[in-house]
Amino acid sequence: MRSPVRFVVEADGGSRGNPGPAGYGAVVLDPATGETLAERAEYIGVATNNVAEYKGLIAGLTAARELAADAQVLVRMDSKLVVEQMSGRWKIKHPDMKPLAAAAAKILPRAQVTYEWIPRERNKHADRLANEAMDAGKRGKQWEPSASSAALDRGAAALAGPPGDAAKGAAAVRAALASGTGARVTAPAAATAPGSASGASATGAADTRAARAVASAEPAGTDTLFAEPGLIPAPAAVSGTAADGPGAGPAGHAAPAGAGLPRPATGGTGWGPDMGTPATFVLLRHGETALTPQKRFSGSGGSDPELSPAGRRQASAVAEALAARGTVQSVVSSPLRRCRETAQAVADRLGLTVAVEEGLREVDFGAWEGLTFAEVRERFPDDLQAWLDSPRAAPTGGGESFTAATRRISATRDRLLAEHAGRTVLLVTHVTPVKIMVRLALGAPPESLFRMELSAASLSAVAYYADGNASVRLLNDTSHLR
Image (cartoon, rainbow, N blue to C red):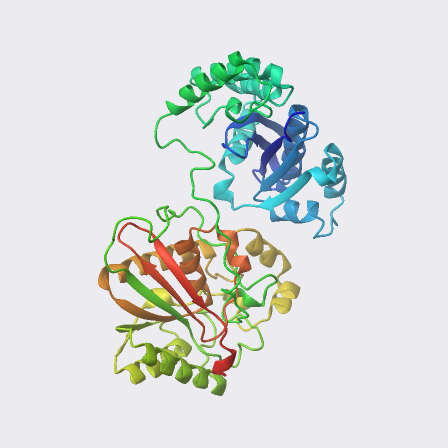
């Protein structure tokens, strides 16, 4: 009896005009190694983005079924609409989407398929295929798979079948890799062929070793799906019921951020050589304002509220706690009033001065400033949905996207690290900067921000080491500070 087969399907679709010339791309991957097992792409004429995305999903699931009809499939897409609708969490209202969703649901039994949203920068393979299909359509042609892609399909099909076919499948994968046209394949399908541990022929094992050798010759720097460190879910302790940021939204207050930014070096802090004294940033979210309990958007473009009486008590309590520890050597604050007031309370208790850093300001929420999430959803439903779907989308009226905010905050972090090497610095800032710094320190994906909450006057600490690693400590329960 062969082992259960598992696939990852990544799919995407695009429309140059929305609606306009459209195409989709889909790829089936081995989840253990990241190698490509099948590719699909097609120009579909004039259509919307959502139609193209659904057609990409259908093509990817169909390709997975052709490889192994009993496979367990994880679908990963950067379309939050498709992921949420196919997961059953969002209703399907658009008449063009209903038949497509129904068609996708019939390809494999529901128990065999799960869905996961990923940011666009982690869906590059499917995105590339979709663009190739649209480019082909512009020339009046359809996308055609390369010879290596066809060979990979044949090899993957054999590898997903009975163990006796493993030799044929491994040879096909090896031939595709050796052709030089399958550069995006990072490891051969034979390496994880179901059943290869029991019942595979000696020839099949030899072909597997040969295919591994071919794969190991791939040039350094090739774009690979699984080259990034494992995804670390954000701890439940980092959390934010905050209005000072997108906290009024569902499932946490922040949307994904940081598309395309470098990830920190891998490896566990404390397991390597001594890297010396780290620079430690103690991240303090300011105390409450009048807007905080109401969960209203409060960024850089709003009324710049002062601390409420509860917020001033929180700042005083945090000051006493930090004075008792006696480790903070410098205090740096966002320029916004609520942070400067919180920082000054701490600095006065510690006998330090406050340096103001523009890069620590909160995101500008544009026309959403001062509104609750429900009010934004009522007044700007399309803009809000775009903002929830993509970190590149900005709030209505010229606000700042989370991608832009991450670039700004990362640059600020790096500059402060250079200025405060080996020191412990208190950074008094807002929900979004704290979450982004924690996310980047953990090496977690942008969508992890959905899982974080951050209480007013809460503390987090990030220690940055010379090898690029960082460690995070969290203290989020500030109910005793009110």
